[in-house]
Image 1: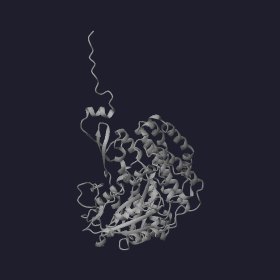
Image 2 (image 1 turned 90 degrees about the horizontal axis):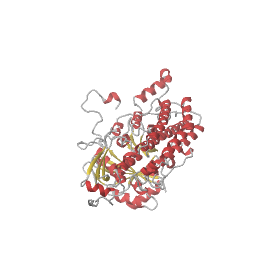
Image 3 (image 1 turned 60 degrees about the vertical axis):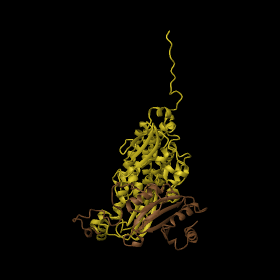
Image 4 (image 1 turned 45 degrees about the horizontal axis):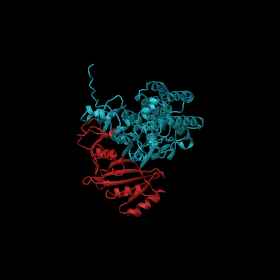
Length: 411
Length: 166
């Protein structure tokens, strides 16, 4: 019998990273984006990889920069609402309402309670739509497509409610300075009631698929961790900050549009990892549902817009038969009405965090300066710090859970 | 902790010639300072035992071409999360002397905010780790948010401002 030479295997006993090192001597540069299906938007990450491990990352942003701040300096105030739609397009109504609140503060318009409640309903619907897509896409990025398909019908349902309220689905341009463009219709209330009755079942179904799923938990726990100190230092707000354990929510801290009338919890995480961000967004959807329910139950009677003829477009039948209404209509549409001089900062709790509008008015028809505080732009800076040392697949999941929206990132 | 307390404390600490222009806009305290004072002022506010301004909300640039001595402004939005008090700090620089010290040593979030102000207004932040354009393309040779650049193509003659009420 021939003797078998036992050759020792040099790779036995090495870790995966060391094993990769055997074959790869130098570092690889990998372009993740600008158009990559897993980045959900147009932004580039230049990763330096050692095997499968990311050792350095750098972002390039600005691919869909549309100069909204420059455009804002030439347009009358009411024409800027359409620009805000296109920032965080997953939750356009929140952006619209934030802008309306800013201008109302400058003009000193008192919005009736009913309009405020309708706004709250719309903003919370938008928050559900936003968190729903973020959480389900996160599941898709870990390989679970089914849950995403289940909950998409509910986002579709919310878009139908938007359609009832403003005629549009994605870029909503909802509401006016001083209130809403139209009252809640019977059909809108019927659709909201369907959502309140049936959406909890759908959300529970989604959660039962994903929340305690072993594969999902393994993929997301301890991935993309950021501490509360670093998150605050990086200017995190919204669900991403709350996942680290800081209970900062603009709705609770600086209530606007009657948020002080509603009972809701501000869910927080403990570790600031991807799983915590998922859980915080999931719980916020339940809280939003509860806010919508309260707002609909206690919906006050009365007008759905303020009596502010200088800024609020009159009814069409009035325009055709009433001289004053025709004059106001013409002046508003042509942007002939000057705003007072002043400086306003107003922030709302957007889908991704504190969405702020800093408006400097010199008394003209358009803002002298308008600065959007865009949460995505600010917290996306932390992305390299969160992914260095992890693998590419973890980076994808982390990016997905941060919910960076390209429109908001680049404005 | 009220706005008056913050204003009085800052004036007592830094003096009236370095903290001025104290106004309240819609409940929000605004103070103006100089570019030499901004770093000590920010550190003071950060480390203050009761104020605790630990959160930098935003940095905005602004341009006032008609006031050459105050031509470019940098507006810092601070937020004390514990006390729920917001504060706006402004400083102004001239076109010739446009450098402002960077805040990146204190706030990591200031990095991109300052790059954005540089990108659009040309305000340079000394000491910044990467003072480059961020949203516009790198080979752009002007700062587009300055008021001298009109939004629309200046060579066009068919759009008369007066007809559009501008």
